Image (cartoon, rainbow, N blue to C red; front, side, top):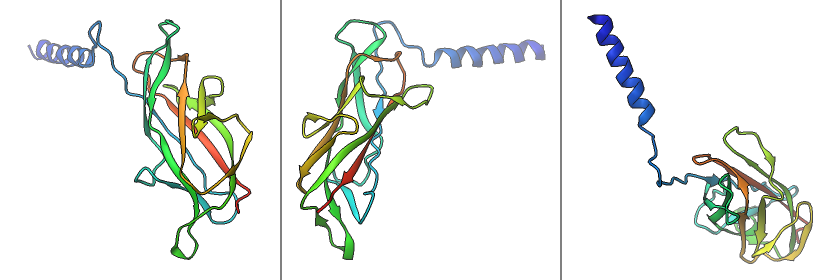
Length: 176
């Protein structure tokens, strides 16, 4: 009797756990996010100042939809949180905007369920003020004024329920 009760309880727990997260046909789930790692300046005291209201550039929301191409294993970025920033120095506890500087997209990677960082160029596009950036190309003549950075992407290989992170690293150069 004890064995039967134990087996029945175990089967109920296992079966219940297996069906708790079942998704009915026609339902859809989208829990994706992207992470933007913005390094400190390579020299001096210059840094990115987040104008979104917090100091965190990481774990920004990103939503996916089925790819326009119609392939069932490909997705497009539907919406990603846009970051608004300026470049400042905070010496003497006062924020000083940069007069002029250049930015370089140092790296663009993504990782899926396996957690392995993979080159994201060709799948994702980082845009600065709505203009696409190219890996290792310098964007010059920027000022300390407000700028926007965003991510987009098309035909990204993924499976339903996958969690994906995208990392873009920007370098501040030639600050005046």
